[in-house]
Length: 150
Image (cartoon, rainbow, N blue to C red; front, side, top):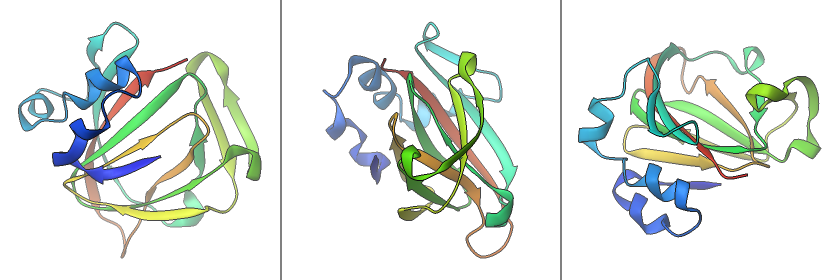
């Protein structure tokens, strides 16, 4: 997991070439071009999509994890609480292997608030609960980059 400020994104280059491609696009200019349709950066290996939704009470959310892709969550408007936990400490209740999606229930080990100016990188092995309310429901907008690393 990496939790940092957008302005520091390039400090994390060198971990994986596909991650470098995504980090280089954490700019206002690129983010302005990202809509609800997937924007391809490198075929199916690196892409970005913008999401807008209402945050939810914790009991209505769940953890998700991936095995082939990492996610970069970049908050554009609003704030949400995020929890991180190792998948092996959670109970799996759904999986769609062809979509690299694994869903879990349980307790988070790390908790943070993602706000504008922040980004979060969750690697395979970082199950993450997103969309959780901070102080009641609010509409948020964020960009999510999917980055294939396995």
